[in-house]
Length: 192
Image: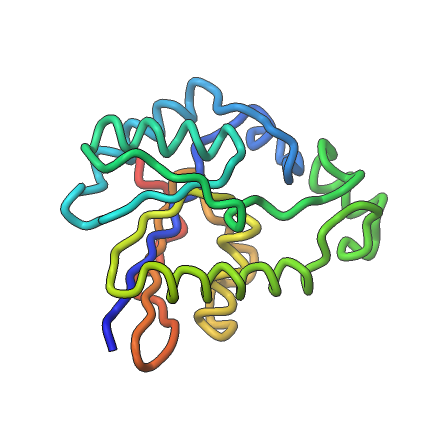
């Protein structure tokens, strides 16, 4: 069986990231720091390590992908809707502490994607990547909650560590082969 390698790059910073606001599917653009982070991440990403770039349809991920591609020489990114961030429903725009105070059961927010639904979508994404990009190296650009869920699933709960966040422009790499999905390199810190 061939090995498929997937890079999980989180988008650059937005103004809502600074305030720890839930962005979800709200389309919040990169700020100046986020654009700088994407440029710095591009210098750490070698074009020879990746065959394709897939991105979430949200502008913060698309702009990060565009900057990385432009500076690294990778092929133009393709939109992959399964890379969309978790929807937080009516809690989007709230700070984390407001979310937890207003919704003691943070998994039960009107209009939000539950953790179970997110996990189902994450498995669909992994199945899609393994089937359609077998033997390839795909850099994906997406979001913190989705990356967290993917890493937790692939590592069978070993990562991320309690309280650990995936920083903007962090890159964790997973792989798929005859043994299934595994973590190749775990890096929750920014490349910038």
